[in-house]
Each structure stands twice: as structure tokens, then as C-alpha cells.
Image 1: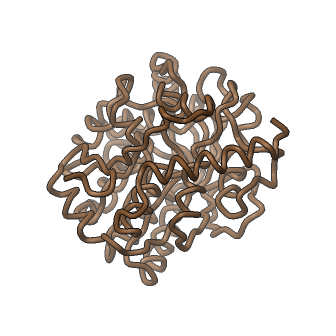
Image 2: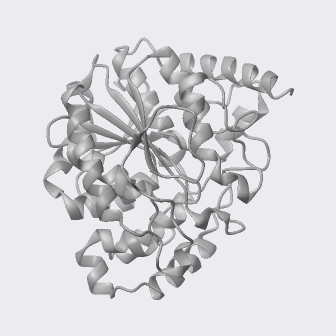
Image 3: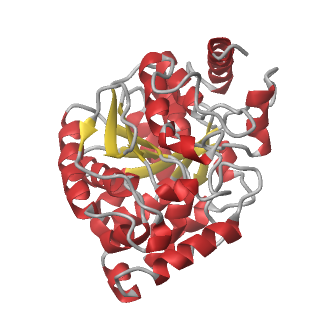
Length: 367
């Protein structure tokens, strides 16, 4: 039996144990936000109608979670073709299954009109420079303490992210740490620009001030050279929280790269971790999240078996064609909603709520 519309995509037995352990419990949800100049390289990201607006995307995403609408921009973050942010899924899940929700500023250029935790991270530079971040170690250590504190008040944590351009930085950090990430990271676009991402990643690694051996030995040096500000923040929260409670890392191949960081920094916590994503990621033929996680360890992958095919709205039905796929913790928070409701909330209920919100948001945008 598939418990509550969940696909066990990797390490099924461990995945079922994880699900059984948190069944019926209400987690704390945290979203790590950040910006990288890498997102503005033409062709890298679909997280905005034009590359420059990607600075606003993370702030707008978390405003949507808190208020049901965005404050820093008019309307909602959309792809160049008008498809809404996956944050619409996360927002809908939180409306169906309310839970404590916190924002962590990994390093953004546009701050959200919401409360947030500050861990003293800074926005990331273009990774082609080989000098992406100034002090990821400080951000990681602050986030580690935050993760420990958040775990004290919750049976488990769900950790999502919002950062445009993040699959490119994920590829670069995986390669810098010695993982085989080539052709394996996903994309918010239907046509995954693997060659562009690899070219950017290789240029950054070549320009890094650290040797290949240094970056393999110290994951934070790999992040400093070619990472983004979401990574050390998310890795710190995961490592701190998973010392004492289960952690569901909510995301796709970006979170798999964060998992690789966690392995290098706090490998003992991985037995308390699972990856929660969407069906669209695990079924994506242009990426391979399982292959990345397999290199990290025996960590289960759970996927929310969402189905937008029946939707009468083209902006939602197109998710089934491979546009957007994941973000703002959509898959993981949908799974958490299924579990906390003990299966009363499922994929069908999620689609109904997402459609309701889609209509409301389109009206707000005058469409």
C-alpha cells in the first residue's frame, strides 16, 4: 500500500520507517532563501519573467506562504511563459495542514515582508568567478545552532528552499566535492540546459582559489568557491536539527547537493534524514536525483504523487509536462500535509486547493 499518495522512490524500507515515525505529527517548516548572481546568466533559470526579477523571487515566495499573496512584487513569481511558482503548492499545503512556518535568510538582495531568522549570510556572486561566497562557514555555524533550537520545539522538521539558479550552483558544488553530477541536476525548464550549466560550473571550479583536493576535503571551501547562500544555511539547519529529530529535506537535486554537504560536515545525522520531493522530479528523464543521493548514502527519497493532469487550468496542467517541477519545498511540504492529516489530505485534495488558490491569484493579477 502507498501510504497517503507517497511514492517511495529510493531506499523504500528506510522511507517507510521514516513515514511511520512521523505519521500524524505536525512538523515545523523552515524555508531557506537566497540569491545568486548566477541566476542572471541568460538561459540558467525560469524563476522569473526576466533574469533581473530573480532577486525578488525568494522574498515573494515566502510572502506567499505567510500572507497568501506577495508584497514585494505585484502578482506572484512566474516563469517566462506565465506558469506560477511551485510556492502555490506549498501555500496550499500549509492552508490544508497548518504548521509553524519560519523563514531563514541565507543571503538575499531583496528582503521579504515577513519575519525571518538572520544567520549573517550574504547574497552569492556569479560562480564563474570562483569566489561565490565570502564566509559560508559563519553562516553554517549560525544555522547549526538555529537547527538545534528549532528541533527543541518540534517532533520533526521540514526544510525547503527558494533560490533562483540553484541547480547550476548545485552541479558546481557536487563536481567540486568530487561527486558525479554531470547531466543529473534538474531544471525548472522543460529543456534542461545541461551543457550551459556544466560550462558555468567548470569555469567557476577552474577559477577557484582552492585546489581540487582542498574542495573535496572541505565542503565549505567548495561552497565558498562555487556555491550559493542557501546551501550552508540549509546544511547547518539540517545538521543541527537531525542530531535530535527527524528531518525531511524538501526539494529536488538542489537539496541532494545540500545532503552531500551534510555528509561532508556531519555524516552521523544522515540516518535521521529523508529527501521529500515531487513526482515530477523522480520521474524526470532529464535529471537523476536517485543517482546523486545514491552517492551520498542510503537516504530514502519520498515523492508526493501529485497529479495536475486533470486541472482545467493550463498554468497548472503544464506541470505534468516538466515545467517548474519543484521549489519552495513543494514536494516535502505536500508529504508533510499528507502525513500530519493521517492520509485525510491526499493528491486530489491538494489539486483542489491549488486550483482554488490559482484562480484567486490570477484574479489578483487581473488575469
